Structures are given as structure tokens and as C-alpha cells.
Image 1 (cartoon, one colour):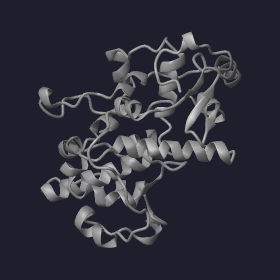
Image 2: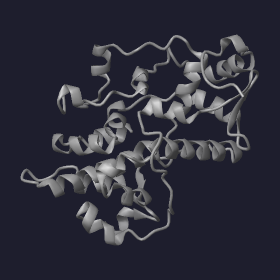
Image 3: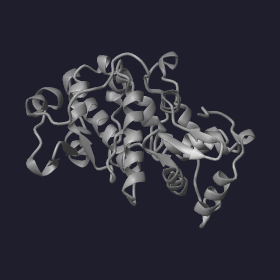
Image 4: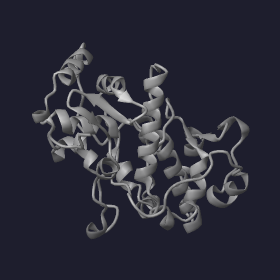
Length: 287
């Protein structure tokens, strides 16, 4: 996500389209440092057959409501379904206005850097069609770098491109369900084949345990939030009454230093989870 933000600065003219599609809150989350020892600790306790974390107080899981609240994505309406194997060549000219060369494609994914080079800077006299195409490229790259990222976050899957044809309709899909399913799948893969990394949006996973096990998470104050923006625009993009509400996940935009995450913290996390008692559970569903 950090590489994407530094690579692709959102043109102010495409913000209304990103807001209309429902992804502006995801963009405003910006780069959030992930507690990887905590991810490792949770993967160790993930059980693929039940899609739950096994802890001493029985089982816990990430729910659809968790994803919807943390990321401010829709939870109802149209289900995202279909195939990942499709020919989108005929959609390029219509939806993006460009045709990718062979070196920009890898299987059914496309290089995010190539999308940035082609679509991040609309012409000064760009019309509505050109701006909407740039917004589609931006959203597709945002998906590939964060919500449905591969291990490196440098390619975006083309299966989502048809869903961006009408950005107003894009906002009606249950993106929370898709993110949750993708997170479950990557947790299952990581727990079964001893991978050294995990792809997909790892963000919902550590935030829910923070709510369960850590009651010292502070809301980011205004000055610190501004300092962490990494170049994100802070001026209003629309009228104040139309400004989208920031996702709850914005609370975790805090620096993660060695003071917060010292060496050997994985052992500490393991010990804390192993000795957890039911009265220490602050929220969530205990199965």
C-alpha cells in the first residue's frame, strides 16, 4: 500500500468517481504498519476446516461485520462472483482507453506500475470519459495493492475490471464479503503450507485481535494523522456534508517502532494467547 501511495498521487479530478464507487475510505486509510509477529501468531492458531482461531477460550473468527466496520465497505446488495479466467481484451479500450503490452501482463493480472504510468496523470483538458477511465485504473490498482494483493502487491487481478464498468453500480457490490473470503483463503493457505509470507489484505486480521486482546489502542490525534498521511491530500474533496466517513481502521494509523514491537515479541504474543482467559475478551464472537 505504501508503494502504491507514493507511486500514484490521486488527481483531484478523479476523487468524485472514487467516492462514487465507494473506495475513497480505503484510499484514505493510507499505509498502516502491520504487526507481522501478531499475524504469524494468529496464522499458527488458524484452523482451515472451521475458519477460526483456536485460543484457550475456545474459538474466535473475523466476521463480515468486522470487515465492513474496519474498512467501511458494503456488506449487503450484490454478491461478487464469477470466474478469474476471462478475456478482457475487448474491455481495455472501452474501460481504460489503453491496451497493455505483453510485458505488463502476468497471467490474468496486470502490472500496477504500468497502470500508474498510463492513467495516473489525465490530460489537463481531459473530459469526463477520460477521468472515469483514470478512476477505474486507480481503483483496480488499489485493489491489487491492498484489498486483494498478491505477496508483493505489484499486480492487480483483471477479474475485477468488468465490475468497474459502471462506478455507481460498483458501489452496490458486497466488497466486504469478497475481502473476507479472500482473507480466509489466504489464512488457510498460509496455515497449511508453511509459507513465509501471506498475500491478500492482511489488515482485518490484526485489527480484530487488537480489539480482543489490547485495550491500549488510542485514537490518532489530528496532528499525528496529518504527519502519517505520506503525501495524502488533506483538503476537502467535496462538500463537508458529502465527505465519506473515515473507516474505523483509521484509528490504527500510528507508528509501529521497536518500542511497540521489540524483538522477541512473537514469543510474548504466544504466551499471552496461551494464557488468555474469558474475562479478557473485550469483543467478538466466541464459538
